[in-house]
Image (tube, helix red, strand yellow):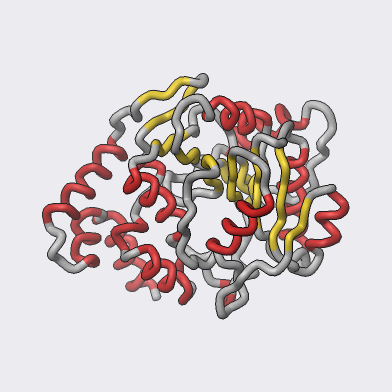
Length: 302
């Protein structure tokens, strides 16, 4: 019985660059020990890729009006078809290495209910990875040279025990909000939210948004509004890795260090609690003035 089930809903393999990075990512998952991979959906090229890489494909995932898979259906199918103690939803542009598996394995002894997450390293790539011996060290060196550690917002995987997240709203994948809700849900339930950024390097292969309607980023898509509604409002999708209750380093849990970013996040949560009666956009302007200034600047440029 595998320790971890990785599950994902790939995009169609019709765009050459998307096909390239998805192939790199899924290939890296198959090299991990004690892991099974489930690919959900019936996108163009998916069946062929699953067969080539020796992973499972499960069709008939429920979809939104636009045809994008629903997170609730993905979780249900993964749970029904997995024998693993740990489940992990992950985007198919993410490359995993052995440190991910080692960290996930050690997490089992730390808490009964928890979610594991981390910041990603963004990486420009234009060719298939050669997975010959020593590929991990070569990739790490190349990623560090580009030096693009992503900000705390935006999570590309969540690993958790099978007993967690049994009631997922019908979020649309590939749209904003659902990943932030995952952190909110864990905090609300009193589970440990474990940031393992100090312990692992997960690599996000950069891409454009041409696969989305009109090529717009996911946070500008109308179905993002549906995700926000299903999440219970804007306040519940503000959660990021800055809201982690613990950090994991060398197999040991510790409380996060109080950085300036952590301090400002606590100030934001305090303001939202005290001024709960004010409109959400007003709280946003007070709590995140830099973001508001960027929006103003963008309006003047357009």
